[in-house]
Length: 231
Image (cartoon, rainbow, N blue to C red; front, top):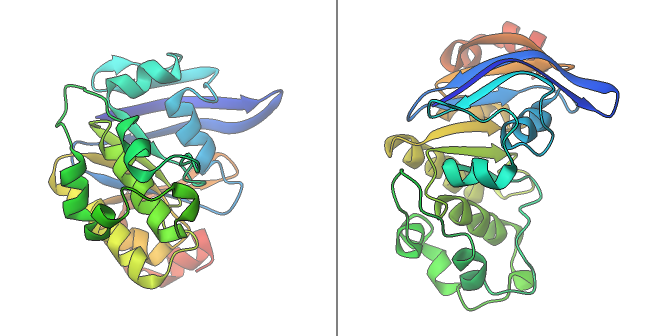
């Protein structure tokens, strides 16, 4: 579904990614882990064309999207759940969701589908987003991503600041996407939660791929986990 080969990304003249390569298969969850500043969010921004890679290639669903405009990349079927959630606070939940609807070649999702995943969502539709809790905003952010009919969802710290019960709900949603054949590239500081749902893991260190392998291996190898992630 997604193939990244040797990308180098810069902020001005400062290089942030150094020959990063990874891939996400159909219905596969790949955890992208590393310390703050390792290049995880920059990788997501490179995929979306928000901070385009200067060299290397990014292919999605068989097409080269390396330096395509962000809106075109989104229309091909890549959705984003940003760390800041970025809901429009002055609009209702229903309106935030309505403006996110896109048609792609992938499965079409409806607000009803999202309410099936997040049962509380149906009671929030008429509420302004500025009056939502952090967990409620995350429901909206993930639902908004699904309404874009994605083949791939990029999740940036979806569990940040959430209560343990909401973290469980988010991770169950990740598994639901996997079951629907949607690829997920998951950036998450909650290493334990990420490794429980991921198939494979890629660890970044200062913009370089320091490790790649099965998530189950890293989950069970405390010494390796401590060396790579300090947890």
